[in-house]
Amino acid sequence: MLRRSCSSFLGSIALCAALAAFAAPALAQTCITGPESSCKPAELCAPEGYAAYYWAPPEGGVQTTRCITASVEGLYSVRFGSSPETLGEPCFFKFHIDCGPGPCEIKGPKEVCPGQKAQLCGPEGEYTYAWSGPNDFTATTRCITVGPGVYHLIATLGETKLECDHTVTTKTEGCTFNCPRTVGFWGQQCAQKGGGSTKFSVAQMNQITACVDNKSSFFSWGSSSFTKFCQAISTNDMNQRVQAKRQYAGFLANLCTDEANLITNNGEEILLDPSTPVTCGGSSTTIGALIAATDAKLAQLEGMNINLQSVKDQYAAIITCMDDINNGRNIGPVCGQTQILAGAAGASREEMSASSPGLLEMARPFPNPTTGLMHMDFLVQGSGSMVKIAVYDLSGRKVRDLVSGLHSAGTYRTEWNTRDASGARVRSGVYFIRGTIGSQVSTRQVIVN
Image (cartoon, rainbow, N blue to C red; front, side, top):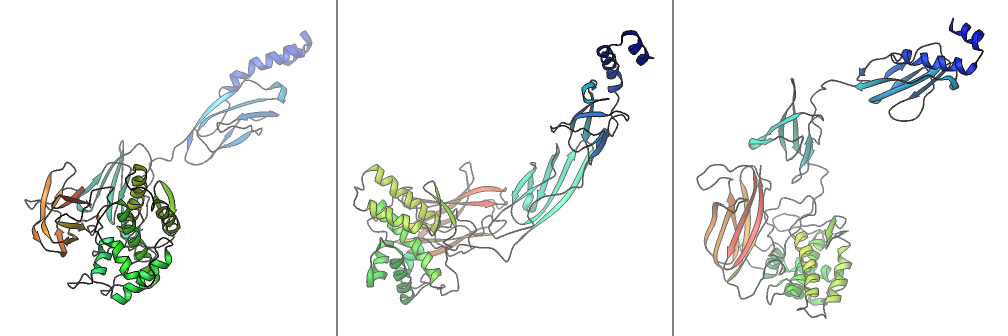
């Protein structure tokens, strides 16, 4: 009837189009069929019988078929008509992706190399998270960073409660480690004393120090390489220039021991992988590339006034870089050697003087992080003195004394069972081991899990 009156009464094509467009919206508001929500892509269809379709999906673009596949959430619209020129008003359809609560899954590695951590993450969503693990570990974040152990997660969203477990084990193969020694260790090799501190013979040290001399363009020792090396390692007349050379010589000795395939007389490895990435002085480089750079910098600074602040700052950067590497800091996984004697901090960190009553050098605590018994070696040099070592918490409160008494020169070991002075186990967290000898203070950090 509409077509007949349109044709016979007015004969106006424009009016026919206007009337058709006026009638289209009522149909268009209910025209799209398909599921309002789905876990998978769903088919949405406009009414049959039209020649032209114009879809505008939420991800953008245009589709011109009667039916399309909705694969993303959002508002879909379609216009249709007998031709592209006579499309009606759009109708809309909101599509929602809803898969419901999925299985409880913890994402993260199942094994880590010794000394490394694993990041574990619960399912995404607006859940509340309750983690538990070994040694009373708890957390309420979606992701946690932890060591080996079995971790349990409860994720709650409304009435939905998901529970799952994840086990992290220690990887035994395929791990690359660096096993450096500090300048304190190399000083003991120069001393060649008894009591277990000497790990290399004079012949082996001659081999190592000759390699150091050959590897560095800055050092020029010739046939006296062992003697010159020991002079560089000595703590006499300490200043930043001397300390920078001292740390650099120890760094090269760690590299050379590995290249010479030498091991200590108690079967321990010493090595530095030249390809290890490091950041020194704010620049990213590798351990191997540091040799040429440090040689050039030491040669540049050698003739400069040590009292100039700019010179001090450059030496301080070398000291910090080499001291970190020699102590196994910021070089990735390191072996769990308990005999690594931590080198004294450079003059940029604390003043050192040959006139002090003694020198205390503390090794890295091992294992670190620890879940129970931790042990730490320390070296007393010089004439010996009163040594005090204690554990402190983050607030600076003393937790427990470990060492207090007169110690002659030598190497010692102390232990901490992660308990306070009353015998109660301490809470998980970060603690500091503070050692003093005379006015000198040394600090090491330990994490209790």
